[in-house]
Length: 252
Image (cartoon, rainbow, N blue to C red; front, top):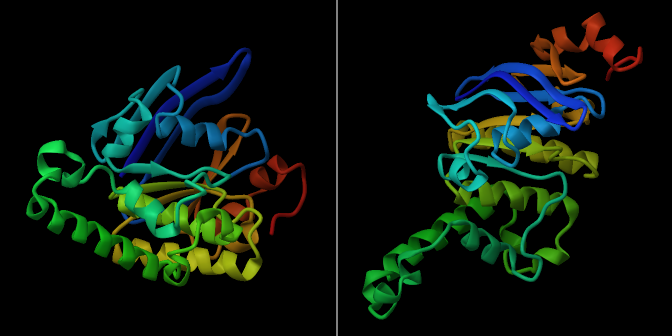
């Protein structure tokens, strides 16, 4: 689903990405970990089109997307979240979902004056939004303004908006940061369900290893802008190179 080849990105004299290469297979849940400043978020930003790379390639499901603007990459099915959720705070959870679905036929002036030309389209979007809210356990707060949702609910809403944009690959930047442990596990359980039922692929950046490692298929470890290890969670977490990258501390 995603292939990154020799990706480089500099900010002044700092090389945030230094020849990063990795692959994410369709249907995988892949975790990217590493110390602060290792390049994890920069990797997400470059793959999603927020930053243009200085070198290397990004290939999404066989199509090269290197350097395309973020909205074009999103249209191709790669959707990313941010560490701090940024919904429309004055809109309800349901309204945020509907906005994320894009322009409907009723947004066109010519179609708007003939109800039957857009009614089915609007009904379909509403049904998709309600179904996704139920899947994410947000149906009980669907009429609540986003500013009144908890931090965990906002994280789930971000995932819901990705569903409404018909994502194929979702990149999540610290989806359980600051979230209560119980809800953190619930969020990852929902990601697995979405992987299985909605046929999504996930690449996740997360520091909460005590939670994330239970649910992922493979792990990539970054340090100094490079991938220094990859493999199954148990193998990676016990790799001496990885432990050293975390300043000699035990990982858990």
